[in-house]
Image (tube, helix red, strand yellow):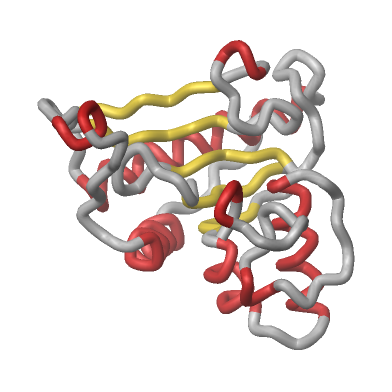
Length: 183
């Protein structure tokens, strides 16, 4: 659990990994550090990554299910580097972000069969970034007519599956899709 519902100060650290003794004061940095710590303590990598909903890890970036999704399958491409600006990222990191976005597109199309996809960066709080200090690229499956009255009238989202199910399905699809090599 992350965000406002969390009762401990370590944002981004799921309860299953709450033994991690650090706090980097960033959802994404805490998430990766807690997973790595749990694995170093003997937890199986799959179990630790499932707890944090990490789908895949590259050299410079990782894929993670959004804990507060707009739609089922909403995931993010997140660099390990704590940076708020796309222009400030090293080219190798930005390149891997795009290659992981391409893999995300293929996996989302395979698993969810959406009518379309939104990919986007919100740079800065004024642009709508919920985590403005650490850049991340959203990938959101979309269907014709998927905006419904629940989000408009009740500020509530209705998702067709639990996040653990999304993780299982997307992780399997990504495992079947090889990582593209950098040019």
